[in-house]
Image (cartoon, rainbow, N blue to C red; front, top):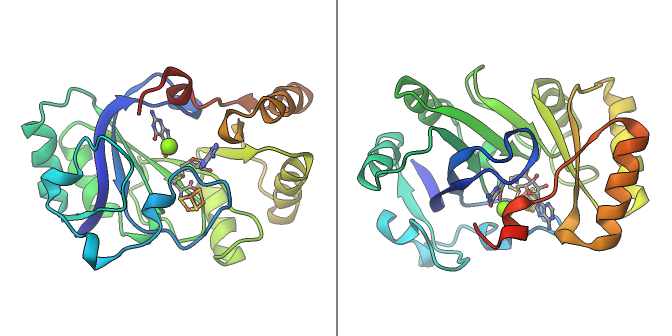
Length: 221
Ligand SMILES: C[S@@+](CC[C@H](N)C(=O)[O-])C[C@H]1O[C@@H](n2cnc3c(N)ncnc32)[C@H](O)[C@@H]1O
Ligand SMILES: Nc1nc2[nH]cc(C(=O)O)c2c(=O)[nH]1
Ligand code: SF4
Ligand SMILES: [Mg+2]
C-alpha cells in the first residue's frame, strides 16, 4: 500500500519534462527536513489524519491528510477521474521511502511513462524505464553510499539554490562521488529574484540548465 497525500492532473512544471501533461502522485512522509521545502505538509505520517482515497484527490489546499492505496486502486482512480495525461510523476514527501516497482510496472503495462522526484536519501526501487530526477540533499539525513548510487542512477539532477554555497555544495558532491551528470538543472528556491539571478548566471557559466517552477508562476498546481 502507498500513502497518498494527493493526486492531480496538471503540467510538469520543473526540469526536462516541463510542459508535459502529467498526473502527480504525491506520497506522504519525508524525514529529510529541508528548511525551504515547499511541501512540508507531507513530512509526517499521522494516523489521526488518515482519510479515504477520494478525499486526497484534487485537494483544494495543502493538507497533511493522507490515504492508503494499492497500485491497482491508483490505476482505477485515474480511469474514474478520466485523466488524459500519460506521464505520471511520483513525488512527495520522499517517494523512495516506498518500493515503487509495483506501481510503476502496473502503469507501464497500461501505457503510462513514469518519473520519480527524489532526494537520493533512500534506495531507489523502481524499473529501469522510470525517469529519475534526483535533487540531492547534501549534508542531510541519509547515507552517502545511497546518495552516490542515486546520483549514478539519475537521468537528471535538479538542485534548488538561493546562495553561492548551494552551488559549491553541488560541485563538491560531483567531485566527491565522481559522478558527472549529463543534465544538471538549477532551480531557484521559492521564486526569489536573487536566487533566480544567481541560477541564470551560474547556468551560463557552467553550461547547466535553468528550471523555474513554471506552475508557481502560472498559479496552478
Ligand atoms: C517537494 S520535493 C519532493 C520529492 C523529494 N523529496 C525531493 O526532494 O526531490 C520536489 C522537488 O521540489 C524541490 N523543492 C522543494 N521546495 C522547493 C522550493 N521552495 N523552491 C524550489 N524547489 C523546491 C525539491 O528539491 C525537489 O526537486
Ligand atoms: N506542476 C507541478 N510540477 C511539479 N514538478 C515537481 C513538483 C513536485 O512537487 O514535486 C511539481 C508540482 O507540485 N506541480
Ligand atoms: S527531501 Fe524533498 S520533501 Fe523532503 S524536506 Fe526536502 S524538499 Fe521537502
Ligand atoms: Mg511542488
